[in-house]
Length: 321
Image (cartoon, rainbow, N blue to C red; front, top):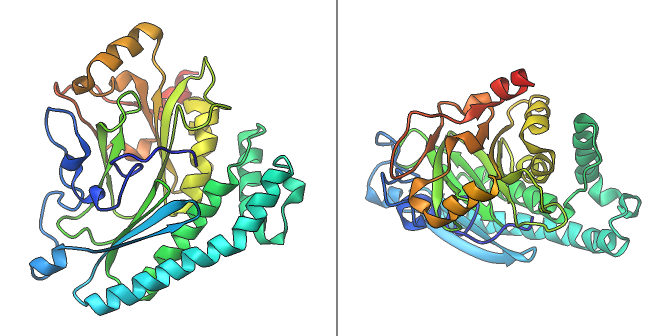
């Protein structure tokens, strides 16, 4: 999906997801650990708090899986099934992606093997009312991640985190708290965290300003967008679309897909950008952040100097227009 490898839910390893403090957070209030929200979970014993972690190269990226289960043998067997599921997806779609790219991204070149990807993106394009270019590789990675997670659950793993190419997905009970805490990277300071997002389960995919020069041209109004949904395929697909559309049109499109939420960071003006580039401790100005309404109580902005200002909700943004 053209996302950079960074230490956060959208960038870097799944192991790093477990401790946001390791992701070079702002030097102010530290984000809570991903698996430690505000209470202890029901896992028994310290061993259950430590995940079994495995990683494999696949689809030009790295699939990393962390599984929490008291039965290590069962967890390892399920993780191997997850690896196999991702590799089967790679085998099925890699030739189609190559053919699609060789044909100048002509959707007519897609075979029946890519119908699910093509048809969903067509529905996104029709719902947005605009021609949007698909990122078939990112969509295929999202599908592979969903299939890997299905294998983990089928194998009996109680709780897990998986990352493929910068898209993260979580399921089950957070080992040390009622919710998983996902770090969102500051688009103006790579490697820094600007927000913590609380999730029960689901997937997060981010598209940033420098992910694709074809859509990150001068005058672009968005620095990054993170899309949250029930599955990696949907999040990966919509992240590029929401970036291209921008917050206002993106808010309207999100409303047409139940269970889909998003966090946009708008691109600042030249003077504001200069200030942002100077000091990461200030985080991201809430005025630059737009969120779908359902995230209002689940997103915490992080900065050295806390503020009562809140991001703009989609309902307020669309109402003003």
